[in-house]
Image (cartoon, rainbow, N blue to C red):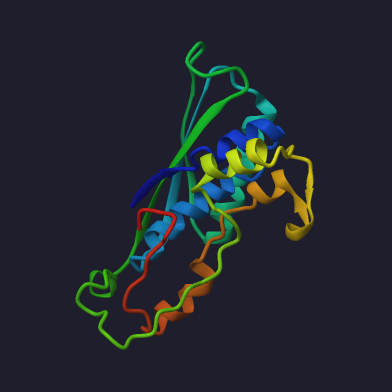
Length: 194
């Protein structure tokens, strides 16, 4: 099991008024945290806290949860939504999720007993910053470089906001065949706790 959030990536969602990637990012992040132990997800629970619930924002976030769960073969079984007037700034919220998965104890990966000198190390490319480093990225993009979220970045072939809101990739489809074949000795989800 794992619990996590998307951190200050939320600030970009608030700036752009775009909330359609946040839920999917969170599900994928949690899936990756348990996948590195060899687990496949069973179910996901969410938490959303805000000062005043905005239905269109809530709907976008939940749609993202549903997309992420469907793509990863797990069930969204509910969670908690809390309205706390005066606690959050207007238009802001926090979101977190908990995921539970399953792996046979004999197939659980930790790498400590199996990884040895001479083993191959493989890195899988990310789809962006995922859910880490956003305090620095926002400072570089919006303060140091003076960009606005809708400014195009030629090298990235998209706007600054789109680049920073890129969906956190689920690595499960890429690693599942390797896990089934017993070819993996250990893994690390660099941006997560796994």
